[in-house]
Image: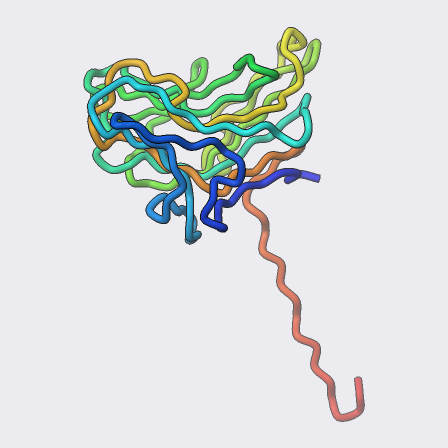
Length: 217
């Protein structure tokens, strides 16, 4: 079935994802956060140099023991941590109220990296990426796989993950900020999809024209 739930923000609303603003940080729907040629997207931006947290999440329509979570994201140009080692815990899967899997955007002091377990993937600012990750709840073949721009960067399905419940909530944003982020730092996301199989990029389909000849064929 692949995609079961999706959120594109194209009506100019957050479509149920929570938003908020303060003097230090904002999570919002904005035309400036649109990715992939869309009209609206979401973003989180630090207005001052701070380690304030503000995320956006939504309760899913279903619960999943095998979930694929995909979205486009882009780190805002000029974003930096005050010191090397600063990071955002920027996306996670939840069951009930308990986070159990998260990916990190890590500032090394000279570059951004996508991190999870042993994965340390370099990222550029002002560059759009397509992130997809999978979590499987199973007694023996449970685990995680991560794709960036449809390339598998990490895969481990050798674990007992039944100590976690089925996933019923997803989250994106500055759900945890370690070390100060400089003013103006943040990232955007758009075109969120949730499914039960690999999503990837849909293959375009084409319909060949049907010509009617003089003999009616």
